[in-house]
Length: 507
Image 1 (cartoon, one colour):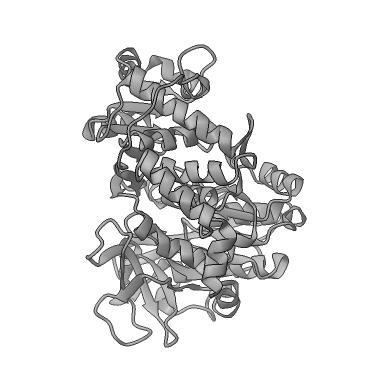
Image 2 (image 1 turned 135 degrees about the vertical axis):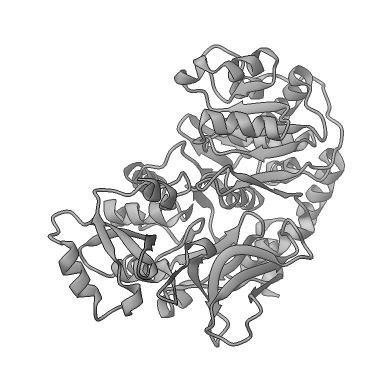
């Protein structure tokens, strides 16, 4: 009965809500635009989206996305099963493009706008992309491949002062043009990218497949109680896209920004009294350091996209209260494991347990506490009937809660012992003078491999390798002791807020 009440509260499980859902599916088809149409019908005047350029209502966002779909079909020939790549930061034009392309039944490829020109060109060729939607930068004017695509109407910027762009097309009147009812194309997000060329993870949106994670967020996180949502995570990432779609379904007031800045984020939250935020741990760490008092309006913090350190989890719960949730997922499996504030209070190193509709297993291990490869199976994964190897090492305790031990390719064998860098990272972060730490394996003549620690000290801290080695001795096993400790002023991070270990290893 509690779930039914929550669904009723969203407006979707009311007679009018169900009518609007059926009407949207019959009018537009089963695609992302149907979600936006339902929201526009249920909450037409409610503020839908606010970015640096302004805000729009749900009715305006839907109408502009429909107009954009008409223009993309008429001017750029986009039809079902064609491929459109969207490489945009978080802003209105990029969001309109996602809905418009899905409305046309084309496949949506979400690319990281931080990729190099060579990486982007290679991906567009590899996947035979028909249209490339991107964020314009001045230094792109010299790119021959981009200029060629622009001339052939195979590329269009999201915003531009004078040339045709997504923003202009969305504001253009669509007259009496009516689009056909179509089935959605695939939504493709890219995995990895720090160790080589990104790989695609494709998923066909389905109402039935979307329900289990949506219900989990209603039942366990109670998102239906809150109206405002700041999507700090990149929407081109699976976590950010899921936040966008859930926010639309709930009729939330959504806030986005092109780039994350801790000071600007704190000001935005304080100014608009934002209640819910989705972010990666690095963003949370920087906001807590900048101005934790500005975050007092937050009722829910959803952390995902990267590992949440136990130290950061404890600091957040102590400073902001029991509002932190850890969401674990992968590009292939989607959102699948949830850690509640109560769990993080008791077991800050745990990522939680599988949500309803998800199965998890640790290799072929049946004994709790043993470490193995983490496998996930869920109805909404890219391969629904198969166990998906996440690439993470983990173990499960006697209560069924899961603990990560790092990536499979991060584990080293040192003197015959399996060593997990994440364990040393978590211990280093307990030191009061350490702001950040990354650990990885390096070759060693005697032991085969040893650990190297890259450490960032807090401002004013006095710390050297010898002192840190002495501090570690009673806290770690012999084989966990780093052979090398290196201090740096800052760490390199990927666009998703993960420490860039490849860049560190290459230096």
